Image (cartoon, rainbow over all chains, first blue to last red; front, side, top):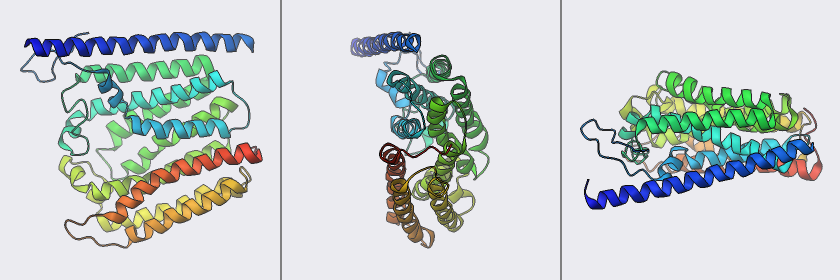
Length: 41
Length: 310
């Protein structure tokens, strides 16, 4: 792998991990909200 | 996670981007699925807390995205040979095949699990069946075998309003089945309009789409036949008292326009290098049609408070 390819690979992996983290955070918030709604019913 | 190239000759990592995973989910198809699912949910008699309504629609979108990823995983070789699909992440080598498969399975599993735990298990069971219907019955079994693939496969796209409705009411009744029937009958003319001007693509990969298997003339006649059935199916909720006049009149106008656009398609004979304008116009209108029809259903329900026949 050339240095440019390696740089591109690392950049793509970083952005992928960032998005995955945001998605997981979103799900944690959603499950919290669902629990509050369900408990309140 | 380190991705490696599909090609056996190299182990060079692939710089797959998160956008490639989004592309796997067929976002444009999801937009229609989410819309019809949301409309089914809003048109149903009853109330669902906004958080739960959001969760139900999210589950429908995740299931559709997961099933689309499984479809792309299974058909990667076919996609590579077709102009319309050659730019997708797998044929382009931007993703590894097994990652697409795992992504699809994870999305589908999560969508069914969340739907069942947070909303309703009947909705979750129908959601699971809709995934199986699209990924296995349609993609793996019927699509490569029968020119009726789209007719039967149309069922997969018809599930979202039914699931949205059941998420609210918890039961399968006449109205959601009619909504299912509308999309089921809408799918063949919608897709065959596309297949008519993409015919060479399907012929090249040996998929027995109707224009390839039965010929253009037969396909054109069937487009018209389905448009007539669609007119009846779309008016059925009104005739049976499930909706009010707003929906009824919109359905009449929209389905009438759909039928009028099908007439030139049905009776045309094309030459080589035909620009296929009537077919392209019909395909474009068919998408607007479905959005508008389901929007009318929701407006009708919100304004007139109909939709109580269930």
